[in-house]
Image (cartoon, rainbow over all chains, first blue to last red; front, side):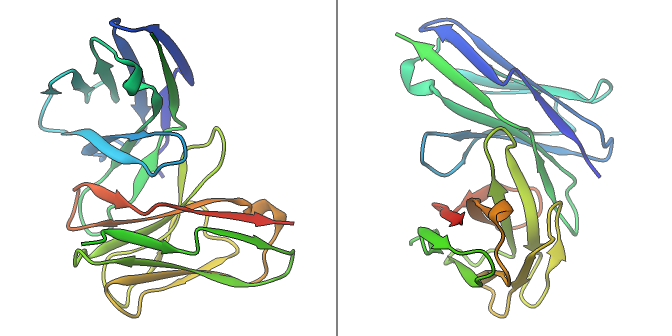
Length: 113
Length: 112
């Protein structure tokens, strides 16, 4: 099955700096890659996703890049704010009949004011 | 529109006891999932369903059973709870293939 690895496990940045979280996957058939944000004690919520036919996607301060050849994708957060502090999870999935999702182990982002 | 709800929110079981976790969604989604979340391990898929009356195993299905008799409900059962099943359980639903998963608020289960 798919194996998703996520790095780093913790990341501390100063407010206003950029943060980058990286994930690799093993199954070349994976074609959908969402990113979820989970605040302490809350449920995960989708913040951005990308499909394999696109190399980059941006939504305001958040962007995701995908390198299919190298099988890795990254989340970029610019101009970080204290409210960006949370755990971020990447995931990989093969769209189709089964749609199983494989999640990375998470990155705890701490934005210092 | 409540989205995805889970019952109960918290539960403490003794080893060997059984229980059922209920997940309900009011968005008419086809796909439903049960995950467990343990510190440092992300979300791991237990079982999932691609439609009413269907279920399938995920990464960590041992010790759990599921049923999806109605499209809006997905039940997760623990027949004989073990301390290793202490975790936070999240249910999620998804409308169609490769779309956003909507998560429930979670159930914190402790097995002593």
